[in-house]
Length: 519
Image (cartoon, rainbow, N blue to C red; front, top):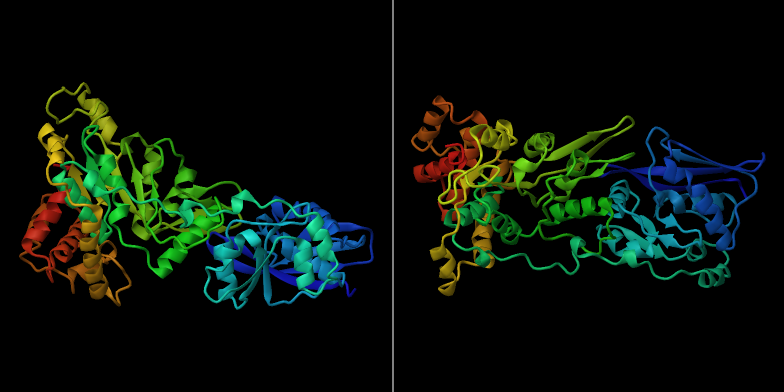
């Protein structure tokens, strides 16, 4: 026993991973087990898990003073995934195993010596590979998730004794592993959310009428634009919103890896495959600010807007949400990221989602309609809709009124069915291909992310086409941000129609969709 050994693990700050050196020194003083280097409660509690797991594996820890240092000491260490790295370093210092310094360990220990899955394995392995440590060891339930990272050499084990034998310990330890093995963890199964057994998206053929609503949904999908729908209850706003993911194209490799990393960090279940379909999040209007944007004690976890990254965030009954919650969306809508600051660290999470808002025209839902009269006073109507602030609505590209469905439209179900999602998705895919070809080299993938400077210069549709926009700005009905958003939608309309540049008609229609609710 040389009294000193080192292993490696990864500390996650948001989606950013940092390789951590786990250094162990076994001294000659009174018995003890100390962990230093900014450990949280879960890391400190690993001492008892490690003692019990090592004893169950047949290699009790030394009765001497054990000091564990997690370096760099200034980086907060949170989570139970340091367990195996610590026990390997301790047993390496005792001379039980030879611990290679090019291997990263990511797993929690059970008291029986079993290796249990942890959340955040995908971003942790990705960080290890990028830092030059492609060899990783995980729990068996995390094997598939770790293997999603290209270039990683993944080893997995179900019991500590099995792992120790693989690193030079006495093979007789395997008998103990068999004697104290535990049943398979039911939480190790992949869920539908992580890519296995994905249920089919709702189909657009189910939507009755709503010609403008279907058109706006197609425009939103083709260009990645945000959408607001205002209409009476039962008009089909929710049906339209739920069918948006079904006409969006599959995620590319880079986006898919990023989206899957967020879901891995959330930790509902180990990921068995990359998320290829755009995610859809529809939180209840009682959601809190930390649940939407991310938060929690210790290291903040990603919220609904990050789980909707590269997908759709749908806020039904939007005016019922807390005003602070709605206004918190303004910065992520512009930057595509959310930053959560804590006393000891700052976490950054991706949040480039499509926002879809649905709202009734007033609290009773009958303002501006035909039939039942609105029972709300003018003050109540203003108070109800004022939850959607001007700066928030200015960031929404498409705004339309969704009328109630008539009996004539409803009875048309017996005739030719409406277009299905697959047909619309093919047009959306062609429009996205046109955007990628045009925007190559400009650092953006869709029209919704085109910088304003590019739209004013190289991608300007011409003075004649933007004349209505100049007039709207002079009349103070359109802001400078709104001017840019109308041009972005006009380019999407051009892509859908196969035009090489937006026409005045495209710009006029884009302006209509931007200002129809405010009119």
